[in-house]
Picture 1: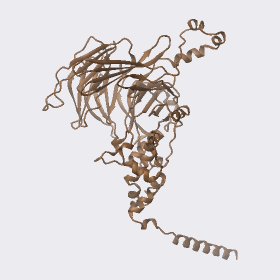
Picture 2: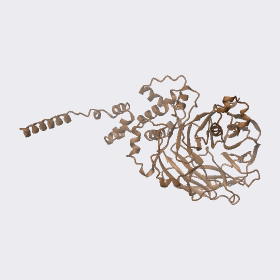
Picture 3: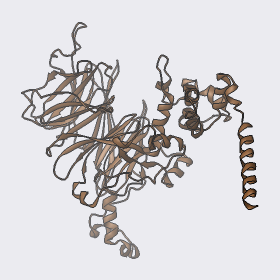
Picture 4: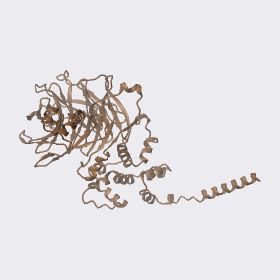
Length: 561
């Protein structure tokens, strides 16, 4: 009887299962594609990813560019727009879709919706999502087998990495193939002098790029990279100068500005060649438009050049020692006419809110302290103050952001206000998050920044847009939500269907708590690298120059695509 009972139960379960399966009706697929798209537009990102796995039809519909454009706007643009004064968005999907079509609502990202530009919005969403999570694939490009003094110079522009050392000038692709694009040896007149400064003209067209290189001998050269031919051409090579080592250089064609170690600033203007001339032609010697001598500019420093029809503006951001008070930062703007006349020169310095007198020795300071205060001023406090006001390890300036890194595991961000009447630097805000000394940092004009530790084992991405004047920004600053640590994985281990695909489904970002996905074994400790202070990034990659303990140097590329 027991056996027959089990058979009856099995028959009932089987018939129930069959009836349940037969009752499932796919009503959604009966709708038109337009209605299905309307339904999908209300789904969250995680469910859109699931829908794409159902069939070829849903893969195309759930990957519709307009849906992902709306999702991109809602997550990465609209939160910034809502912070603007007078914003009255109601939060509805229709309102979001309407605003996403207006270039004025994209707040510095208008280039994504230019007419005639085909944008893969799901790929763009995934890219920004990986940035917010700090998820990147890592790879290396060896650039030197031995340690070079001075170190290899690196700059990055439009997905091309430029390096300069005693062997010459080279260009590497930052895309997935990561191959050398072109290389050239330096001219015989400067081949015996190592390069000390490197700059790329950001205003050049897509077919060519201009590069300026400064040398230890005081000479400088201008090169042109033809992207179609994958070749470098030397346009001009300036003779060596007795003015000293070129410590910084900038180029905005047809102008080049150099800064020497003796604090001499020189502005040169090249004569524009006639229309039939080509980029690889040898240029005539430039004309020295203006030069200035300073006695207050100290490294690290950053120079930038901005040219208009009426004037040329040179900006020099630098470290500034102060009397008995450690270090702060300064900025000088020099405006020169195209004929070489000095229009104006303005100076500004910053005083941080953490700015306190530095105790170089107890004797001079104790006579200004009361007895209890003097007892409290211990040797540990002295060491702390020395660290707080020690010389910055790096400096990066992209108006209006001025970012400084320190050896005490912190950074400081300043906002520069430049108007027709005044030039000021706001009080600095300390950025906490690193667990070791910061050797380099780089900030972009939209407020995104990347910093790297001295050991090279900790990279952080910072969102600094707007500064910290508002109460909301101050809460973010105090809550350590300003940065995310980059978590790396080997490029070979990343696949389209593995962890990389699943990460898009996780719509929430993890800030300040990330850790490296790749672990180093104890026997690899001796191979830990040191960063040479240079770090750069673009929309898809972060590039760091590292040096191994045995002397080799390499470019480490973190790919967020």
